[in-house]
Image (cartoon, rainbow, N blue to C red):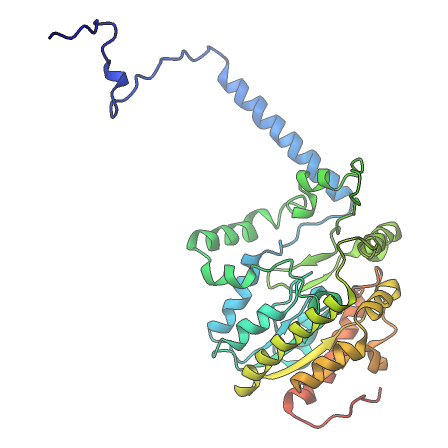
Amino acid sequence: MHSSISSSERPTASDRPGVAQPVPLRPVPVLPWSRVVIVAVTLFAVLVGAWEWTWRAYGVQPSTRNTDALWAIQRRRIDNGEGNATVIAGSSREYFGLQLDVWEKLDGKRPIQLAFEGTSPMEIVEDLADDPTFTGNLIVGITPGVFFSGFALHHDAVRYARRESPSQRIGQWLSMHTIEPMFAFYDPDFALATVLKRQPWPQRPGRHWGMSVRKLSVTQPDRNTRLWEKLEDDEDYAALARRIWADEWIPSDDDPTPAEIAKTADEQIDRMVKAVAKLQARHVRVVFLRSPSDGEYLAEENRTYPRKDTWEKLLAATGAPGIHFEDYPQLQGLRLPEWSHLAYADARRYTSSVVDLVKPRFSGEAVSAVDPY
């Protein structure tokens, strides 16, 4: 039999798999392209300039972005010959409060800053405990609501440092040395999407609208960080920061119960006990540090994480020494504009006092439970 398929029904070349489709020709409109480019570039420059001017007028200055890649640069120093250094692991109170230049002036060596804001130091301490190249001194900052809850905003930093690709390293280098020193708006806190997200959108039934944390700090390339001057000089901005902290303490239905809080705290202590044992087996000196807090923030910490059930339990379980700001007159009476972080001048005085307090503990000298002023 002969096929009854007509020629119009037969598959064409464009219907057969593996055969390229013809590309339609699209005429390019005749336009004054040089002027179009000039207008586009001018408009872009005007918009970027306006955005930059907006934030400069608000008091923002260019600074280094605090990223996992920036943290990884400091972490690699340990593997590249600085394993005997003093390392700081903690949360924002140690990150903003311990000034590296002050420490270096008093101790002769600049510490490696591995603290991260809003992040428990637990995973970082565990990473150092598993690294035989680290044989130095370790300060572990304990912010009760962060450490004992296991909260970790930058939970991926250790993993990132291990897997960072060459292109990611190059991107970090280019960002640090080209864009970040020039533009204030490049801080993630001032991205348009961030600004829009922070607007007080209409409440949805059954959902509490909470304010997100605003810019608090200024960072240098080696992660030496200080509290942003605006928190010290602008009372309205400091008050906003305090309201944001207080907003986090409004009770909600999904809050953990006291029993759940205690269970999580005990789990964090157990993890720290194992990590400290590994470190001490290599003769690494570990000192815990409870940096100052004030006002309603301190009151909330004392309610949720009582000292005897957390701090004292941690020290007893690990056998490591600790420095609690409430035990030392020289660590008190300092200014914390938003209850949680030290003003710059006070941070420098605080760092000097901490250096004096940790030196005998790192050298193994006997110290009293509460040193005299």
